[in-house]
Length: 135
Image (cartoon, rainbow, N blue to C red):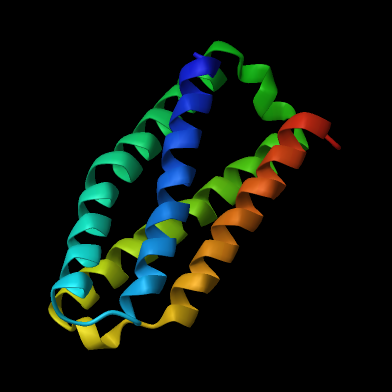
């Protein structure tokens, strides 16, 4: 179960990082190139990000169900909170892609750079918690 959980996390977070990078480029493009970046980001989001998130969360929940004593650990509570924040970043990225599909001129390089940084920081914090288990 943990192998599938880690696979889902890699697919999910990797897709979010790639999509946020693609969307940073949208602000600098015009015409067909801009449209293709937006369509590509939306397709990647619909398939890779959503599937990765579902696999990661489902397999993580099944792993916790198989080992419920892990929920007694403080680091796991913080990890779950960070995953919820990652989900909020996931939803925010989706909402911005939808908004930019309707108004391509509203793309902001800065906003997607911030999302990219937040996702990266969350991944790093989650990895520290999982490997070090500080409390």
